[in-house]
Amino acid sequence: MKKTAIVLFSLLIVLYVFTVTAFAEENDLSAFELPTPVAPNYFVFTDGDETECQHDDLRMYAVIDRDVLELTAEYYDDSEAFYEKYNLWSFDLRVQYDVSLDGEDNWQYTEEWDETTWIGGYADGYQTIGVSNEMVEDFEFFWLTYHEGQGEDTFVPLQPAITTYVYHHEDWDENIYSFDTGNHSLYIRCRYYMEWEPVVMYDGYEGPGEMQRKLSDWSESAVFGKNTTQIVPAEPTGYEAPSISELLIEQEEDGDYYNITFVQSTPDSVWDAYLYYEMNDYFEPLYLESQVSVNGGDWISGYVANASWATRDGKRVLVFDGYESLTPDTNVKLRVRFTGPAGISPWSNILEANAGALTFSDVKPHHWFAESVQYCVDMGYVSGMTPTSFQPNGNLTRAQFITILSKVHGVDLDEYKNSSSGFEDVKPSHWYNAAVCWAVENKITSGLSNTKFGPNQDVTRAQLARFFYTYSEMIGVSLEGKADLSAYPDEKKVPAWARDCVEWAVDAKLISGVKRGDKDYLDPQGTATRAQATVMFKAFDEFRSK
Image (cartoon, rainbow, N blue to C red; front, side, top):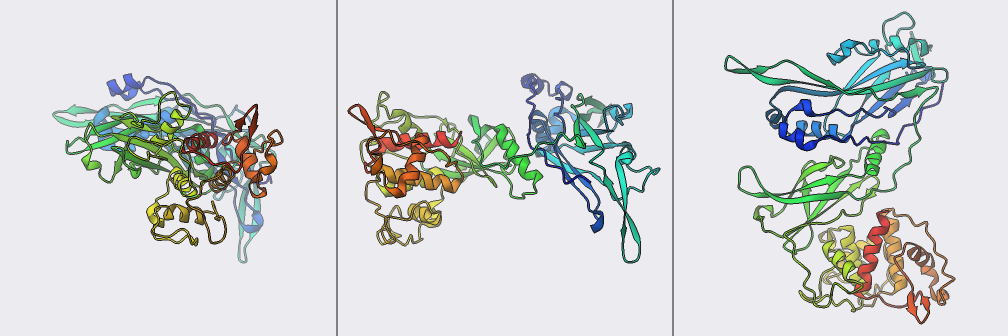
């Protein structure tokens, strides 16, 4: 018997384009064009062991195209509204599977499959799975327990590839069945099947009209067994950030309150990661976290409706404490990110409704730091020293840097406000205590010594590199890059404890040389200004998003 087959992971999502506007205006399901699914190479094979009385098992994973997912998600979110919108009595959308053994010349399909999803099942080589509101639907394709050998009517299409073993129980014998993966190949194809009944009137009463159906083309074939088309997956190392658009403040249907709505788009790599964990039995879900800022206030956590279905594209609704006070003119900023077994993604782009311009008198559009200051203010990383002054040339202290870093990570500092960092110069009453406690807990800093953190000391460039390095290690950002420092005249001034960190930070373009005459210097003991820090944080977000 062949050893356990490998899970396919390379998810090639087909972005089938159809006319959304016309579809929405007509509210007619017949206008919805079903895409052709990609080859269903998504399966996990458990190679049974006849010596342990274990049968073979093949699980399939139906990966749903995004436009189909959006339609079924709309149905499962509110079926009553869905039926009313499209004037329906009933609705079903499924994936049909067909098999052919050792080639593509003995498919089990008959015209009967075009008329119903209830044909017979395994004996006909037929399988079907309903499409719900998840991007992945998994099911057992076969479990070779009830096969009774050649000549029986179970698993007819598979019988030439099934071998029988006898397991001797203490008091009886049991046949154990196995798919011969070393000598046979099972070809598998799939298509979408959609059926619906419109509402019609019968003598003043509503009832179901004539059943309507639509079928996609069959996919290309996937192959299980001897000539398997499965691909070895790579475990995800992180998530790309989502992107968001179309931020609106919309009135609820009852007219009492306003909601924040936006449109989410998910990178293909995040879908890939979601599929990987589904197929490897990880039960920690992928969530969508959100933060909102109202009228220039601090970022606060929000709740995205159906946030556990984080990969879903399309319109989402945000709720947060105090949303009842929203008006059409409220200044609102929004950002979201993924969190799951692969870690935490960078924040998305920021959307703003009813935006106002920065009012810092010391940050002008022509300044080299203006863009990064704007970015960090928008992201909620920094704020002005006063409402009208940013003080870009002011030095940054170690406490200020750690506090900014905690905001980059989205830490709820209230959880740490009464904690103790263990440093004599950081007390629970200090404004930076919570951020330092968070950084110590996550091994981002160990202080200047066992007893001193040095919160009011200006942060040096070497310390900045070290902080970014340890934080990246914590969130799983790549630390492989190493720049050659030999071209810098002061490279020997880099402390030994910071050498690896500086090499990495220079390679990641978080730190660049300080120009002195015609040469660039690392200046590891030099300090960083508030403007320089915003440039570094913007560069760091760009680096970890790659």
